[in-house]
Structures are given as structure tokens and as C-alpha cells.
Length: 387
Image (cartoon, rainbow, N blue to C red; front, side, top):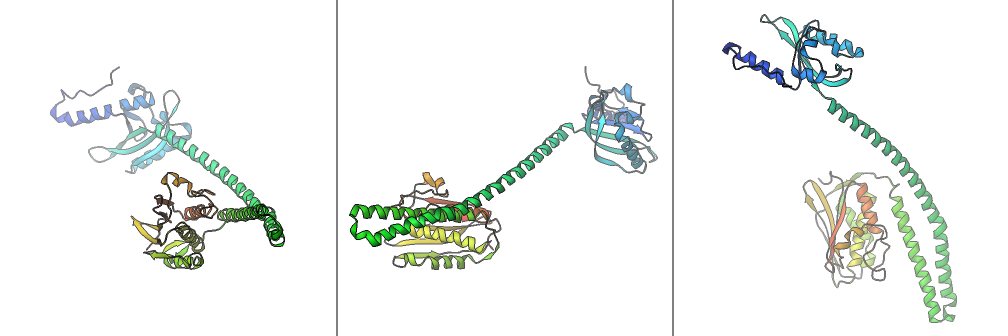
């Protein structure tokens, strides 16, 4: 059935504006209703018919309260009272009844209608069906509630896992380290007291046992240090980055005192962070650079920063062994190594600690390198770094 439209082709020129207005009202998808100050419907457009299910003949002359659920009847009187005072109601969200008894969510705007003398004689109501929006909002609310519930559950699981990790750390530190110390100590005692009586093969076996025990001890120590980072509180303060790097270099002085190493310190802006934790980042990155430049006649290590928009990016660059970028994603994993232990010492935890500390400061760590052409390790802290 065709929707009713206003025929303006034969309207007298004086009535042209009214005809245009009638056509707009009738063709609107929104509800447009006229009512008097007692709430009696005086006009009803096609949009109202589509949304509420009543034809104009069924509803004009009837009370608007037919559209209002019993528990919301007071809303209509409050709206009419405001209209009588010359006020308007804008974007009032509520629920109304259809002819079939179902409900529809609507956003209502009501304005006063005045006669030629300026007296308020009725009200114009425009309503829009917002059921889809309300349904979407309810879905989002339900999903958010479900997400919050899952976060609470995951947090409880994480806390339980942390407690288990603490128990494991305690067990490792006491139950595993003690026998390793015994293996190392007794192996050393055998070497010292009976080494002269053992064949070369036996000496080699003992030295292998001792080296394995020492390496396992180092792995356990580094694993415990990594685990402690989860429990160690981050205490932010203003940090003099240049001074922190100098302190780290001083503490690392002995391993490279007999080498030709040039360390270039560039611009190192201050930052906000936990000074002891950030010092550990610099210690690990500088130690890494010193280790992998060992085979260079002259090692060059550059420490500095650059800007990416408002973000400060700190870096440590060296001219050492480098690595194949195809395996870069392994760098920051626990116990992940790109070189054989017999080539370079270490447990593969140092860079994992760097990444964990940087992440706890709201930053990111990454690296770039070429095989035998050196490597550069970058990291950022939170977005508020720098002056």
C-alpha cells in the first residue's frame, strides 16, 4: 500500500508553505504527533503509524496515555506541565507501548505549540525509535560485565600463579641450590686433594661436572632474579639517565679494563622511573655490548637517545658480532640464545629481564642488527619521558 503524501501541486500560493510542511511531516520516518494540553492526540503522521501500529483514525481524539506503560503514566503529566510553563523537553529517553502490546525504546522531544496570540495551545512531539541502539548498549553492557568478571577471575588466577611461583622460587633457592653447591664443592675438593692421582680423562670429567653445576647455579640465580621482578614494586622518581649510565659503566669496569674499548655517551635525557630497576636495564645492555665486542681489536659502544615525536628512545649500539634478524623475536625470551655457550658465556636471561623492566615502565624494547656488523638495542619508557 502506498504511503499517504500531501499533494502540493494544486495548493494556492498562500498555502504553499503549509503544504510543504505537511509533506515533510507525513513523509518523516520519525514519529510526529500533535496533542492538546490535556494530552489528547490532534495529529498523527505515517511515521507514528509505522512505529506504534495505530492508524490516524484509531488514535486521533484519544489520550496519548494509550501509548504509555502503566508504570510510566506520571511521565506524561510531568511533560505537559513543563509545556504549559513554556518549557520544552529534549531527547528524553523512555519506553512506549505499541498497539500489539509490545514496547519500543524511543527518544522524545516535545515543544509547545502557540496560537497567533502567542498562547500555548498544545504540544508537538517528535519521537525516534532507538530500540537498536538500546539493544546494542545492552549488549555492550553485558559484554563489559562479562569482561569484568573474567578480569576478576584472571586476576585471581594470576595471584594464585604468583603465589605458586613464590613457592617455587623458595624451593629452587633452598632445595636445588644446596645440592648444586655440594656437587661443585666436592668436585673442587676431589680436584684439589686427588687431582694428581687421577688420569687426564678423570680430571676432564670432574671439570665438566663442576662447570655444569656452576652453570646450573647461574641459571637458577638468573631465573630467581627474573621471577622477583614480578613482585618488586616500581617506585618512580626523576632519574638522571646520564649519571645512571656512568654508574653502570663503573661497575662493569673490570671485565673490559684490559681491552681497547671506546664508549661514546650521547644525549641521555632524564626520565621518570625506578632508578635501581633502570640501572639493571643499562647494566644488562652494556654488559651485552661488552661481551659481544670481545673479538674486536677495538670495540666501539655508543650510548644515546633519539626522538620519535614526543617519545624518547634510548639505545646501546655496538660494533660486535651482531645477529641474524630472522631470529630477533627470540632475543628477549627467557633462556633464548643466538650464540653457542662455548662462544659467549651467559644464561639467556639478561635481555628477558631488560624487557620485563621496560614493560613494567610502560615501554617497549627491540633490537636491530646485521651478522658481524654489530647490534643496536632500543627501549622506550612511558610516554611522559624526557624534558
